[in-house]
Amino acid sequence: MSKYPDDMSDAEIIDRIAYWNDWTLHDNYIGRGMYGQGCMAIEGEDATEIIEAVAAEDITGARTDQLGLNMIVYWPGITKENT
Image (cartoon, rainbow, N blue to C red):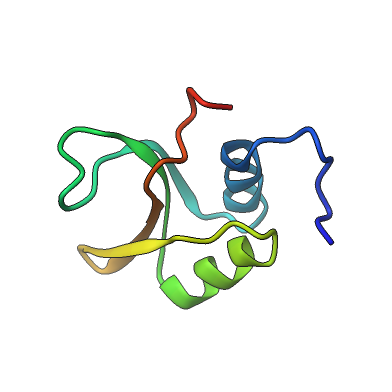
């Protein structure tokens, strides 16, 4: 059961999770093989922690990339525009 209101979009929930965990939010991240299609992403030190926090809200399909010393977790198809 989500702790967020039913009318919140997946993008809004990802935004809130990043905020409350002091992670960096990217609202137009373009990952490998996305051909210019931006999506929501969270940057942090532990990709597993980010994936588990977001998956607890029934948001799945995460992918990861290395970003310097950090990891970035992104969700293709979840954009700020489709909120």
